Image (tube, rainbow, N blue to C red; front, side, top):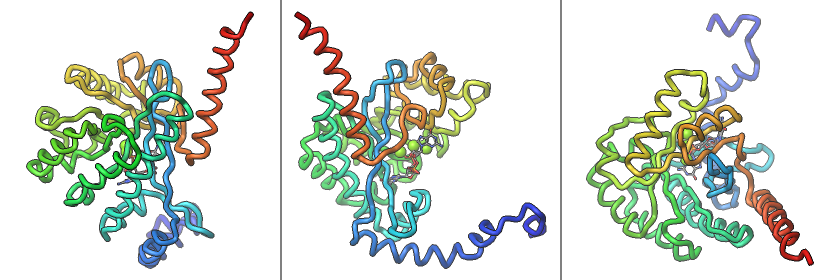
Length: 292
Ligand code: C2E
Ligand code: MG
Ligand code: MG
Ligand code: MG
């Protein structure tokens, strides 16, 4: 309290503090209406090859655009949707919409892409999850291997029996599993042996201070090397500069995702980006082919 009365006291900060609980209740109420009004949308962040920087896929990231208020952070509304159960509806929609969208991106770029979709613990526990996933594949016409489901370590640790049977059902459809925010949860090397995991996403916390931080460098190097020995892919999250990218590429991290190689963008902006890339490629090949 004493600190807040000092000269550094910020009015907005203290106002936020006082209105937070009330605000949360109205935000949660607004959420149900927002689902009906279609205020939720998906942005897409490129996941690129660490060496060539070619786009290999996209992570679908949910956004809530409130008219008159602006964007609500997923860090705020995802936990709310998780506790009130709306996440099943929202997450199911996201899964289908993302698969359909990626098919469109593919048509523009003319080569296969994959899509990474976050799955929350409550969705993962829901009996209908497999049906929703199968619908998403069928509706979009994607191949199973083009879909990557991002789950967290906690999901595997809390109910390993359920996780094992569900993951086996998922991988039977060729859909792949990624561990999101790897290294920040209740990690256990045993689950890398037990479960069919295709990808580890190294959390931004370990990337942030690369390459200077000796500890972070050690952790990243060990994760990349472990993954490569297990034939598991690695995606470094939150890559924000060239040094981080160079370091990770040199260590053998296959894929990176971050503001440096591409921010999350609405589908229309991704389409413009892919069209520009495709036009550049066609122009380049046109020059050599059409030359008399
Ligand atoms: P996440 O799955 O770990 O997603 C990565 C987050 O890092 C995203 O935050 C992304 O915008 C942010 N990010 C990407 N590159 C950078 C970078 O270079 N620097 C920094 N500082 N941040 C970067 P976002 O979009 O705010 O999402 C936050 C979290 O909300 C996600 O973390 C995920 O756990 C959850 N989330 C988002 N969409 C969904 C969804 O559709 N379903 C579920 N269940 N959770 C979602
Ligand atoms: Mg994620
Ligand atoms: Mg992540
Ligand atoms: Mg993360």
